Image (cartoon, rainbow, N blue to C red; front, top):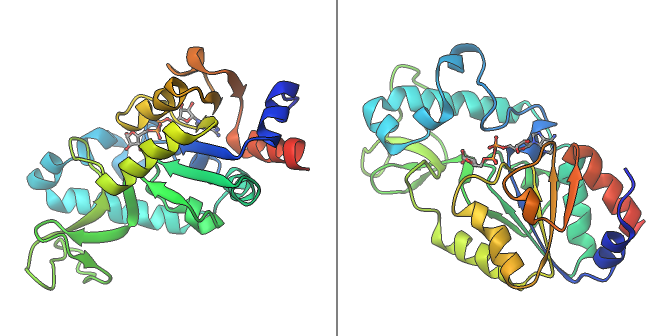
Length: 244
Ligand code: APR
C-alpha cells in the first residue's frame, strides 16, 4: 500500500498517539468479528442475545457455555501481524495508548504494555454476586461454577450490553483520546458507545483521525485518512514506511 506522504511525515514527528481497536484487528487471527455470523452450535444465537445480564439471568448455563467456547477459541489462536505492528508503534512513539474493545487478550499476548481493555477480558472470570475474581473453577459441565467465597454464580469478566464500562479504563481512554495528536480507529464498526465516541473526543481536541478498516464506517467521513484494507497488512506496512 502507498501511504500519503503527509501522513508518514506526521507520524514520524508524532509523540502522542492513541488507537482504538475492534474485532477487525483479531479477525486475521481467525477470530470472528463480533457481528460476523456465529457458527456451529452457536449459529442460532446473536451475540447481542447472549452477552447481557438478562441472558445470564434467564439461562446462566447457556451464557457460561458460550464464553467457555469462546475462551477455547481464543486459546487456539495467536496474535497476527496487526497486533505486532501495534507493539512496534508502542516502542517508537513516546506516548502511545492502546484502547481495545476486544476481550480476547491478543494485544497483551503480542506484547502491548499500555492496553486499556474497555470491555474486559474473556480469560478473566469473577463472581456475579461479590465480584471476587476466580482464578480456577470446577469443570463440572452440568452447572455453572460458583464463587468459593459467597457461593454466587461465576461469570466472565467482560462488559455486557447494558452494563457500565470499568470507570478507570474509560477515564484513561478519554484522557488519552483528548491528549493525543493522532487517533487511530482500527477494525471497529464504530457503532457501540461509549467507545465509538473516543474518536470524536480526539478530533474535537484537534487530533488527526486515521481509520483502518476493510470497509467504510460511520466514522470514515470524519477521518483525515482512511486506509482501506486488512489491518494485519496495513499496520506492518505503515510501521515500515514510517519508522523503517
Ligand atoms: N482489518 C480491518 N478491519 C476489519 C477486518 C480486518 N482484517 N476484518 C473486519 N474488519 C472490520 C469490519 O469492517 C468492521 O467494521 O472490523 C469491524 C468489526 O466490527 P464489529 O464486528 O462490529 O466489531 P467491533 O467494532 O469491535 O464491535 C464493538 O460492540 O458488540 C459490541 O462489545 C462488542 O466489542 C464489541 C463492540
